[in-house]
Length: 98
Image (cartoon, rainbow, N blue to C red; front, top):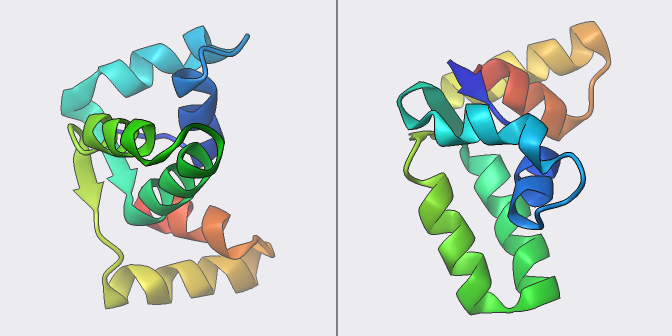
């Protein structure tokens, strides 16, 4: 399974210099888990920079993977991870989703 961080998605969608590093885990749809928090972060950034239509297209591509909804158990696991590893909220959610 692959959980791809929001920054990796943004690099991939922008076809940035490191996009090729992230293309295999993103394009291997059967192994891709997409945290809902990633959808939020990517939509927000793409919408601000390129408009809502592009943001919706990005989300549609992200939703081809398995969306890891932010359920109560995931939230509590993320909070524990955040405390134990001193991670920011988003990073702990991504780790708990994985």
